Image (tube, rainbow, N blue to C red; front, side, top):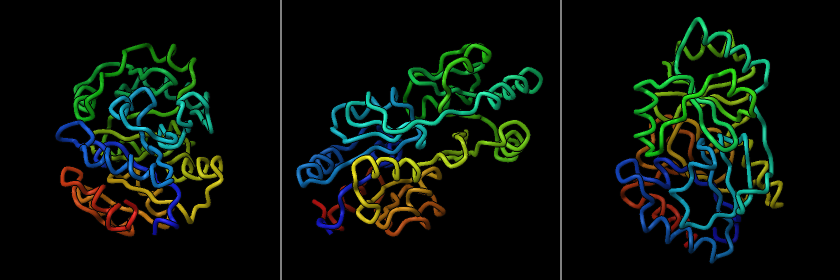
Length: 262
């Protein structure tokens, strides 16, 4: 197997990072270091913005897929491999809707995440992933910047209504039930993987991915070697070729050992 796998993509929350400790288990850090020593390239594939991957600062990666594929960069975090932003006309339509139908929305821009108003759900999500809450800012100002992704804090039926009526060019994905990541249609971790593999001239048949959330399903179904964490939901496990143990039980390292990659 070691001769087959040339690139591995890792989700962050619930895959690399424990929801309990908000840290990367030491055995996971050691495993990723050994992968790179063995000549395998390792990449992050996350719904987070680049600014919010600080929890991984002591681990060396070859590149980052952020905003669920909407922005891909190399190991320097500066050189952009690919980017796609939410269309301006849809952002303007959303701004108009929020004037009469308010609900909390986070706007993920290049260097900062903003929110139209602070809501208990927004605060709770920030605590779950242990990041600072978004900065409150008027929507009319926010949408003057490039917006790579939206986070909409509503239930699924209301989300689908918003997408249909106001953001028809976008799609929502959840990795926890409190909110949905909203990206331009076609922008997902699968798309990001294809862009990164193309950049590094690595064929898809040499790729592996690890994940635990709903937004990981496209990449788990796309690569030939995919692993769902033991803490993943059943629908995520069904999308993977192999299910390992819980993130807090060394599941990532155990799966890599199972495939003979360490």
